[in-house]
Length: 114
Length: 115
Image (cartoon, rainbow over all chains, first blue to last red; front, side):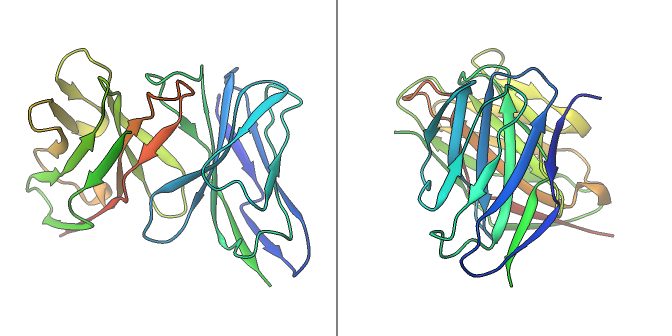
């Protein structure tokens, strides 16, 4: 089955620590996205990538970093500079970075502070 | 700039009764609109999409939505609610100004279905 796999499902971060969230897709999609979801709120875009080896900041990129070295993979690092990282993180992909293309989502990673 | 407003943060219906989740949008362009559903601790699943074809869009699980340009609305409906429909629903508009596939999400509507 094609889809998006996010791991781990739950993650805990200590003060001053960087953590990396994994996102892998086997849909052969060009575009990939990272969102943050806080309770009772919609999704906010952190970073997106339209093609391999290229990515752009979204609306709330501060304290986060990404890479896109392979088409299938788009890992997100939550750095120690992100002072409020507790949230539900969702990765998505679309066939092309076009307005009429729906995005397909993984099942998310829940990040908490120890 | 595009924006989307979901008019109800919480909707409660009885099983077997109709569902109406309201969404208004703002867009300077002809918009692409989507409805997604999210069950607890899960990702979002696409219910349906509107991309300037028929104004009445049919989706999965018996849901449908009608695009009304004059009212700038895209309300989601279902004739008869099922217990499994209880979830969070998001109305979404594409950010056509950037041509990057970026989506703009509403705040979400929690649908409660009572037995």
